[in-house]
Length: 164
Image (cartoon, rainbow, N blue to C red):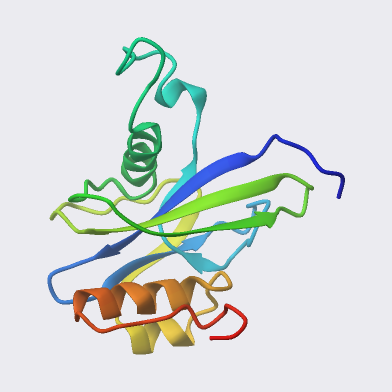
């Protein structure tokens, strides 16, 4: 791939309920990337997430990713969540050649009725043992495991990194 500056920016939210279970959704079979795989809510940053709103400063819009992620959670599963906590970032190239940067966050569930949009075909609240058995997007189980350890105040490292 030739060096280029343009990337799709996306974000995801690992949502945990008071029982310590995580919300996972199954992607539509028509998705460009990872069709049918289990994942967590999230999606891409759109210019409408900030460009048509009042700037935070004279030149900038702050919290564009947070606004985008909250919009995506609402669209995909009809939920609102508590504060978004940064977890990690990753990059990949979609099958159609578009480079993607993903910012992964976690948040606590605010009770509400889940309603899936057309991008998902199923959902469940699951613990780590159940999630490990699902056909998850690569690396996502490890991210959820990291959040579980954060919540249990245990130390962790990301097992997919070389040298860990």
